[in-house]
Length: 189
Image 1 (cartoon, rainbow, N blue to C red):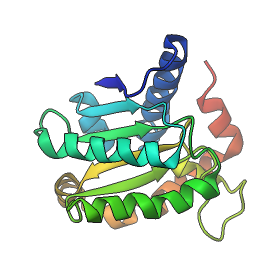
Image 2 (cartoon, one colour):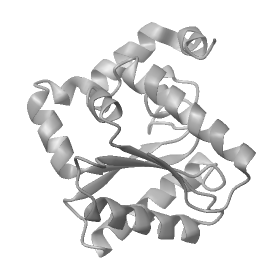
Image 3 (cartoon, rainbow, N blue to C red):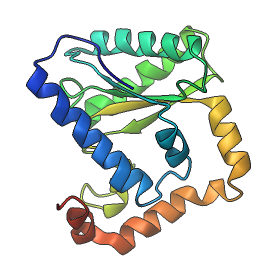
Image 4 (cartoon, one colour):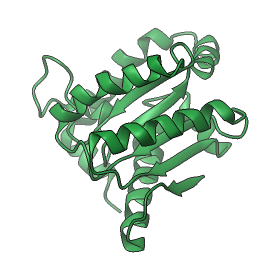
């Protein structure tokens, strides 16, 4: 389920959505970076919400709208949302600080314990790592995006996946085995 939230040039929409889907299929699902992603992908319960927001305030407004939509929609129909924002928060440091505002919006709107945000960015960098550390690629996406997750879905997935606490370490091992060259080859063809 895809939706463009602000008017965008039609020729700008499909490349963003196609790159996002390709990343989801090849990296997130293909490398099993998130063992819970395949199920919602196959069931078409992911919303790809592309926004033309150009300011933090516009993005916060869109985030509020997306959270309200998730809250009002049956999880069997819509389980999770990728709020893709290619025109704002392109600098990772700006994005990183914006996440505090996004978390505050969740709390202020009464969604604490209901939703959480997974952060994904083309320049993602874990604290204490070098920018070119291949482990950073576990959270690197083709465009800046906020992944809106239902806490109840996370709880069910963790209960079904006995070693959920090991996912982070396993993902880093996967990326280290793959290396930069393997990551690059993932996008060929």
